[in-house]
Image (cartoon, rainbow, N blue to C red):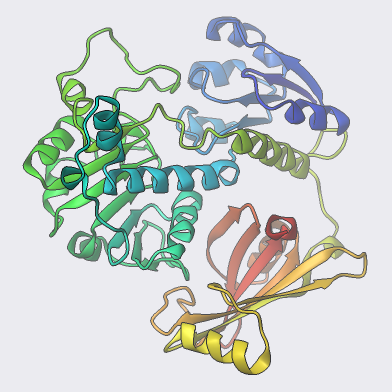
Length: 451
């Protein structure tokens, strides 16, 4: 299979694909029109954000089997048209979710402690302590809109603080031990800090506007490490001036080009942006939240793994897995509801010697091949929505091989599948219900992520 690389990425990407039998070619300079003239020669594309993959491009790509974007989103691709041509779309949100979550947290702490203003003043010879008095994150309610890979990673970072974390998502039953899923109205009523982790599409375009902002009961802090066009900058500036928004950390801006490689589509500086960049309670960065040394390697590795999982060593056909290669391989965890999780963890630690942490207890063992494997024991607050739609006070986690194939088979057998598959650095997850309504979490693990 011939793969055309349109952007430079970590060298492991091409090295590992070549070792797996794929043929790599590079073109980092030709125009989109020049690429269209030869794209029929290739069966795969690897791209970051160099240009949009539109209908014209896809129509010329007569032999294309997949498009792999080394990043979290697919908004630069005409996804519906690509799928109609049976082109597989691959992204890597698992690769930079940790980087994004750390960046969001850094922006928030910067705002709370007025570090931008204080740094500027000290460098100009001013030593103003009282005017730079900060506020603490503990005791606040953090609302997250969009609870996929990025939102979940941010919520996990917040577990080190004494905060209430709420999440809203269009998908049902995505809340977990790190964030309680609530209706949007409850988010409006309780939020002190709002963090956006949503894709940019027709439902989120200009979502944060004056009307949206006015629905919040309290003044709040705003973080956006998602997509700039989800916020109307003019309305944001007005809210910052009025005090409805106390401060903003923005890694993305409304005015970015779709390639994310430059800011302006014209040479004119928009008035709202001109005002925004002068504000001390606004922290800006150039779309780099997911742009770390580590994430560059992780993103490439995720893309390699997904391509290799889809296609055999020859790279010619989608891999067909025999029945014996999927199914349950062990107990992944036992989760149960309790009135006071912290008290329960302390009891088990004191009386049974379990070395519990904030998540519970991880039991390590080795399989028959000597690989390190883990099983998790975790108490959940009794009002958790993570076990839904089951009403049982517990949930089992089963370690499985080849989750996607297993779920395909279960659907054929008429088993109730709950929600959609979700992927993280530590594995892939799916959920089903047994005949008595017990929710079973199916985990295709990557135990190395915990080591």
